[in-house]
Image: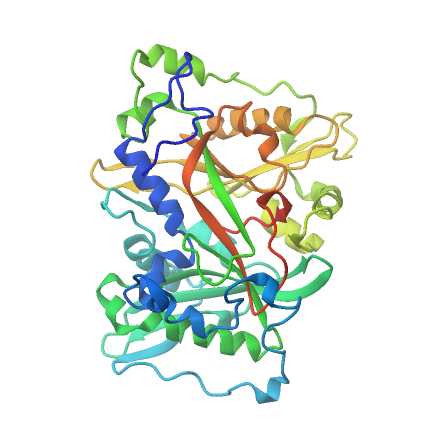
Length: 433
């Protein structure tokens, strides 16, 4: 791992530090998030040269330079009746199975599959801990389909051993509006990675989605596959110095004491912005109007409906927190901020790292920096130990002033079966879970 460009994890004399072992591990785990967790399963054993992308090189993605492809679908959309009707054949001993996340027993199966096999650092120090409530939120937006949430079971004992999901959305990529799906939670049991289930899962989710007349998808990965439309970076803001030092997420710099570190990252106990309160059902229309207007300036964004804003942003305890500013108390929302919760189990310490992730934020009557300072205070009140943000949208405005430290490694954004010019992270208006 490399030494970070330390925006917030330096001491008050400006000394830089190296990553702690656990911090390096958690950053490495973030790099693996989404499809990266199964990269080797999908691509073979990896390595240099053409074998590196043995699977992805066969898919309808830009290869070489994006400039070699005209804007639009790489493989033309085709009539639904021409799409294969039969599911792809599974290796012997396995069978396809839809997963009903509304059923507590099946949701529990999915939770345990992910908790034990999804994203884990190379040193086995910790693992992402998606709660069952988080999975319900992430997988059941308006218009979701049961047949887009499926996996693989062992034919003998019916145990769930793999999973993949797709949820519907509409995006605009530059000037083109596209019905798409967001692909997430591709996971194969550790003991079955050699069975090459991941490529079959990807082909099967593609077939099922194509059968509904949708031919594009958006996903993220830590790996540079053919060919990203954008690349973003995680930044981290310390909220609980004692806890983060204790679990070795961070460490004291030379000549720095714990008291000085606590002082460096100290935040006010309460936000002082007038009219700041949790988002309520009555705020959906106002938040929707603000969000749609704000996202309009970005080159890749979701075209949210009011129902989708309600689903994704109304608060759910331990899952998503959203706050609005209604300064006059008349129900007119002028600004809002939000973050979701994704803790990690610290496997060798029997402890949990509580992380908040910046989601969608819009400031119109105050600076984005001031809004996000309040957001940090609110996340700390929710017992978050660290606050993470990508340098998407306008986030670069607040990262340095609010003492975020630069992470090591990038998250790549992809649009499946679609060619368009590459864009800087500041032009990306999508946050995927």
